[in-house]
Amino acid sequence: MNTLDNKRIVLGVSGSIAAYKAPDIVRRLIDLGADVRVIITEGGREFVSELSLQTVSKNKVHNNLWDKDAELAMGHIELAKWADVIIIAPASANTIAKICHGKADDLLSTVILATKAIIMIAPSMNQQMYASKAMNENLRILEARGVVNIEPGSGEQACGDIGEGRLAEPIEIAHQAANLFINNLLIGKKVLITLGGTIEAIDPVRFISNNSSGKMGMALANACVNSGAKVTMIIGSISTQIEKRAKAIFVTSADDMYEAVMDNIENQDLFISCAAVADFKPAKVSQNKIKNNTNLESIILSKNKDILESVCKLNSKPICIGFAAETENLISNATEKLINKKCDAIVVNDVSNREFGLNSDNNEVHFITSKKTEKIDKNSKQIIAEKLINKIVKYFF
Ligand code: CTP
Image (tube, rainbow, N blue to C red; front, side):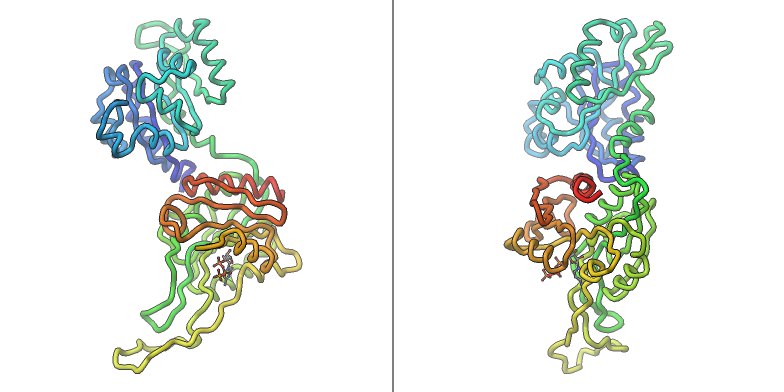
């Protein structure tokens, strides 16, 4: 996994000669794991072909605020909500002035006004324009609003002038976007995370399991690594990409997961129990495949050990964060788990809602401690993971 894995980036391409570099910016962002959609302005279309941008981004390029078909699929408000980051590169003098003054007369400026995403601008223009008082003031206003300025380089420009105003290199733009997600929140800390579902064998070919994809746990592992932690993952059955910067230990059953957790729990600062552990396993595993003509009416089950509860009982336990997959009475059921398992916090999500939860890319959760319950609104699992790490650090480190 990379630092932009699962991040949703809108690249806004405005009218500057440097727009010809936009397909390379798209590629660099995708190389770091991002999902990229492009908005191009009228000016941008003069300098780079939409076909190139569509080919590299593998998505339709958005160019028109009044496109009825686009509004039916991913309209301007959806795009504004979808993005984690909006990067305007190249950002022309005109586009910078428009967003500075809150204009909404084309798709890009409207999306900027309608978004909660982080906004980055990579200015690109003639050195005299870049040095002008108006531009300086506009940039100061935008920076004060939290817009990240990817500063231009200096050198010979397309117009022959020499000075500041050349678009930052595409790789630099991608790395600055990735750096947004890197912090020191967990520097020097060791984190153990369980994730995915467990598989409980009935016979050599059949098993009991669940729908867990491991995406939430993997997003947490990614967020912990980006925060400087040393991460070990105990991974059950998953259907997602693996975070390569963390240590991965693969297990099958709840018993295997219990052993792996206990073997690795010493000296951990934080334990995140994100796995969907099967509560029960077949009491006896048939050595041979159970044949069709067997008179089998039921399978006798026995209870699996509760891994989270066992870790919470350890003498020198780490900070323990559990997850609660619920379909009703979310807060009261999860609070009961917090108390019964004696963990430090529980993250509860509604798995009856198909929009988020098991197997989806999105989630909406409540973070519950003995003192407070806080909601984290619907977002990508990656962003939810980052918000959770922020809360865990705020409360416990
Ligand atoms: N958990 C665990 N070991 C188990 C069962 C659950 O470590 N044998 C952990 C999960 O990883 C999660 C928390 O306990 O962090 C709650 O899991 P969940 O499946 O929501 O609840 P259960 O405790 O299994 O209770 P129920 O199925 O009745 O809701």
